[in-house]
Amino acid sequence: MTTGPSNPRGATSSASLIEGAPSLRSRISWGAIFAGAAIALMIGLMLNVLGTAVGAMLVDTTARETPAASSFGIGAGLWLLVSNLIGLASGGYVAARLSGTADGTDGTLHGLAVWATSFLVSAVLLGNLLAGVASTATRSASSILGGLAQGAGSVASAAGEQIANRTSTETVQSTTQSLIDRAQNALSGGGDPAAMNSDQRKAEIANLVRRRITDGNLPAPDRERLNGLVAAEFGIPPQEAQQRVDRLEQQTKQAAEQAELRAREAADATAKGAVWTSFAVFLTMLLGMGAAILGARRGTREAFALRTTATIR
Image 1 (cartoon, helix red, strand yellow):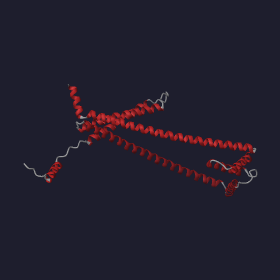
Image 2 (cartoon, rainbow, N blue to C red):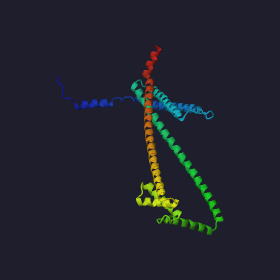
Image 3 (cartoon, one colour):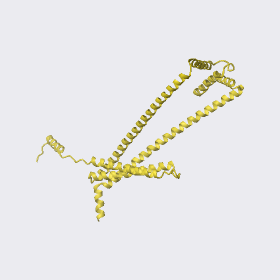
Image 4 (cartoon, one colour):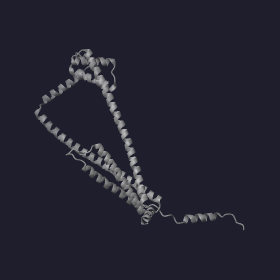
C-alpha cells in the first residue's frame, strides 16, 4: 500500500482541532485570595491591639516599676512578628480551603498570593497613615504660626502706639543718630589699636575671628593685627594676647574636630540602623511567606482529606 505525501491541509486541520479544544479551567481563585488576605490583616490587627493593651498594662508610673524602653521595644517587635505570622498562616489556610484546589502546588501559590496581597495592602495603608499624619502636622503648624504672627502683629501694633505716644520726634532722631554714629565708629577700623575705641576693636576682632573659623587659618599680618587688637582691648602685654589668641585657635580647632567626629558617628549610626532595619524587614517578610505557605499547605483539600481519613481510621 502506497502512502502519498503528507498533506499540508492535514496539519492545518490538526492544528485547528488543537486550537478549538476546550481551554483548561483557571486554577486561581481571587476571591479566596482576597478573603485570606482580609482575614490575615484582621487577625494581625486584632493581635497587635491586644499587644498594645498588654503593654499599656505594664506601665506603672506610681510604683515606678515600668520596664525599660529597650525591653518594651524588643517585646513589641517580637509580638508584632508573631502576630503577623499567625495572621498570614490563617490567611493562607483560608485561601487554600476556599480555592477548592486539591493540588499542593496550587495551594502553595494561593498562600503566596495572600502573603503578597497582605504586605502590599499594609504598605499602602501605612503610607496613607504617614501622609495623613504629616499633612495634619503641617496644617497644625501653619495654624499655630498664623496665630502667633497675628498675635505678634497685635502686640507690635500696641507697642508701637505706646511708643509713639510716649516718645517725641526729637528723642527718636537723637537715638537713631547715636546708633548710626556708633556703627560708623565700629566699622571705621584699620588704624592703631591703641587709638581706636572699644567698639572699633571689638568689630575688627570679630571679623578676624570669623575669618579664622571660616578660612581655617590667618596670614601672618592678620595674626599680628589680631594680637595687637586683643592686647589693646584688654590692656594686656602682647605676649599674653598672643597666648590668648593661640588658646582660642586651639579651642576652635578642637571644637571643629569634635563636631566632625559627632557628625561622622551620627552618619555611621544612621547607616547601621538602616542596614539592621532592612534586614529585619526582609526577615519578617521571609518568615511571613513561610507562615502563609505552611497555612496554605495545611488548608489544601487533598491534604485535609488525607488527614481526616487518617483520623477516622
